[in-house]
Length: 152
Image (cartoon, rainbow, N blue to C red; front, side):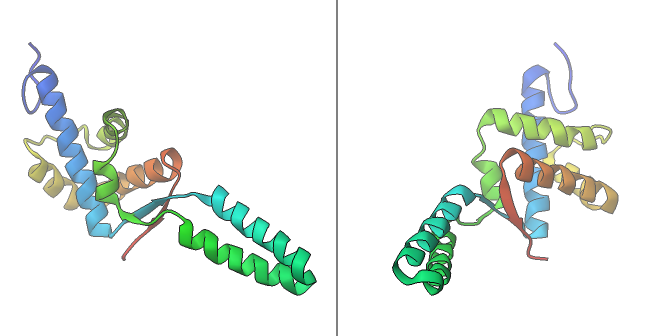
């Protein structure tokens, strides 16, 4: 059976995935990241339909009022922002594996025994922290089409 850094065979790989997910969650927490999966199509339809109806009922001023009200409705019904660690916890296993594979490309040369040690190693190196943040940001914006906000 193959020995990995944290265990034997597949069990070791599962521990590595958990460690990397803990790292990603920690980085997201430190940066105060929140994400909303954009539902922009519905918001755009509401805005357009409201502007159209407003224009039909009130002419040019109705377009402005209808567009504003539709935009407000679209914003109110859009996806709520969740903390990125919560979003990561809710990912299906296949997506976690995909994200971890991308993050492992950044941390593969590090030698760690558990999540706490991995987090300490990455957080003590600002260049490494930024690379991990870049992987997370790219994944969230490109794969999940999420809109991100930061507390910093």
